[in-house]
Length: 361
Image (cartoon, rainbow, N blue to C red; front, top):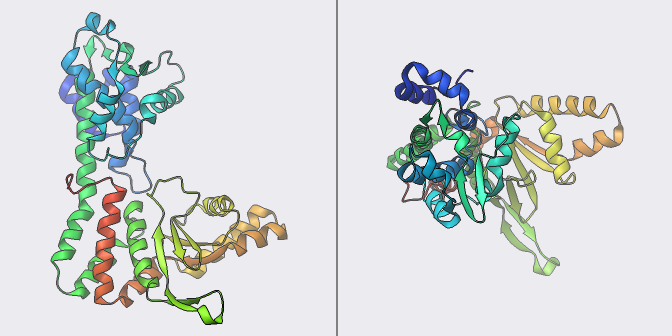
């Protein structure tokens, strides 16, 4: 069986020499982690799976000191206390906002979904205490717990390096004095192969500072009408289950969804989720907005088989198409104060997205 992640293969070779492939082939735990660690090189909305990975790591972190290589002693063990494990993995990189679902059910459910022939759960749950089933800790009489910990630690190291790429760019931006240079550096990040989290955050920062320069007039009567600037709010993290709403605008009530151009079925799904309330799509493409809209219309016609009631419903639900082209145009129009505010916005929301605190940084 091919090992997907090269860093996992390197660690296994280092620890087991010529036996590395046989160890991997016989270990469901190693295969599970290999499948869960795609985020080190993902350029799309690749999930980091930190909750599942950290649930396993937390147990093995304490296990390797207490029970490494001692099967009989471990067989009598009743498990590690829930709060001890939770506090440990919340203190890990990106772990501060993780919930307890992985310990309680998620890992076991995912594990059995990936390996249909397994009999035992990976994590034994014992009245608020947790331990890894011994079946998954020994391969060819090797206790693999230390190797598993080494793999998780390398995964965290690679994620940190990847995450801090934009932070380093932000540091460079702050040191620049010429706003033209700042615009050029931000503009260079708006590419079709940009990591989606970065694209979403930069898009938000541009749109927020673009729209705040527009005014609308609201009031209960002619006498109470007031001048109000448009405000854009980000609703949550990139992978949040937010019902298809990434940004919301006040006071006019517009919805924005950040997406890619390659899956128009997802567009219709987002429209259905919000009960056909109009959505503006912010799309990671250099295609013109006209060509994108034409493709969406063609897809809607094919999907609805010409049923006019459905065609109208979906077409009326697309309020605006915004591509990289518009974002770059609006970036160029921002003044110096807007650019500085935009850099602050990117910094705040990137750290929030990645669960990076100032202490982590």
